[in-house]
Length: 223
Image (cartoon, rainbow, N blue to C red):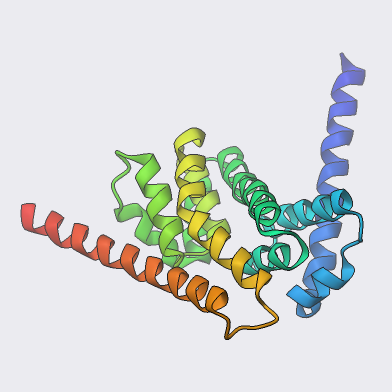
């Protein structure tokens, strides 16, 4: 039993050291992390390229300075559109689940630390939690809050994982598709595909924001 416990602790410490080193390296070279850098770095072997992209999504979940849209667009450049969307969805699961479980392990005591670091997260305190799926969907659709902070906050707050993940994937799906298309047509930003994807992304964000304001106004009227 003692040996099993020791091995478990060693694996935990090893994992922490590995991720810590990886995050530190990415932070030090964050100014070089771009779509071009990722595409040029990725190998020619498709399966290895997919593995590297999923690793980058995992790193992004712990490294707030990387913008997720960069990874979505990079997949659109490297792969065909169906493959790019599939890889981006798998990466989104990793990117949003890791912060969620970090928050879940940290517990409710972590909420105050998160809001101190990201004051914008305080808006989550005012959103009713009766429908976890809608909360996750709406927050991800708008995209105005720090994505990784949202995952940690909702995880620490005790939100069920199933509705969280379903709402998150549905809320981010338009961005996944839009950035994949933009990456696919990145060589010609004036092309109809690029322009349509860009304006769809902007339009959905504006629509979600208006929907929130309407719901907020109706709630005040009912009260």
